[in-house]
Length: 173
Image 1 (tube, rainbow, N blue to C red):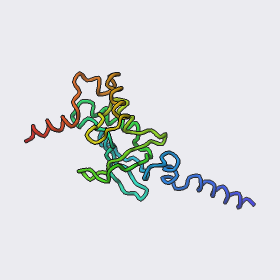
Image 2 (cartoon, one colour; image 1 turned 90 degrees about the vertical axis):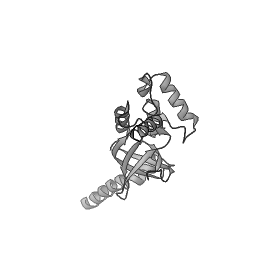
Image 3 (cartoon, rainbow, N blue to C red; image 1 turned 135 degrees about the vertical axis):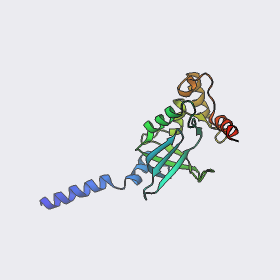
Image 4 (cartoon, rainbow, N blue to C red; image 1 turned 180 degrees about the vertical axis):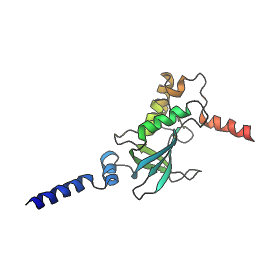
């Protein structure tokens, strides 16, 4: 009899743990393509994650552009993204299979259902990348952060990352 209870207890534990990535996707992001375990934060809009088949993939967050390395607020933006998702399981919804650097461009969702791009904009840790996204929601989030002088909007003259990249290229040419 004890063996039956033991087998039932073990079965229950195995079922409750289950395939974590499959269950997680169903629970917090029904529209997501898959989940990943975040392994590295590269900057405020790029991270690496481990897929269910243990493949490490570098992702670019859709709709935002964060400060570049050596640009004002780049470390704070990177840290904010890290606080949101580092070592967490996140839902991935693919917008584009690959950008010019071979990274999937994706929507990212926390287990609490938070849109990570929106969270970065709300905190003033990224610009709305209007060149690639025309959503009113993201535009409004950036506008609100600007008006409240949150994050990078505290700077007297914040320089958009695309302008920073353009000026950096001209310096090295």
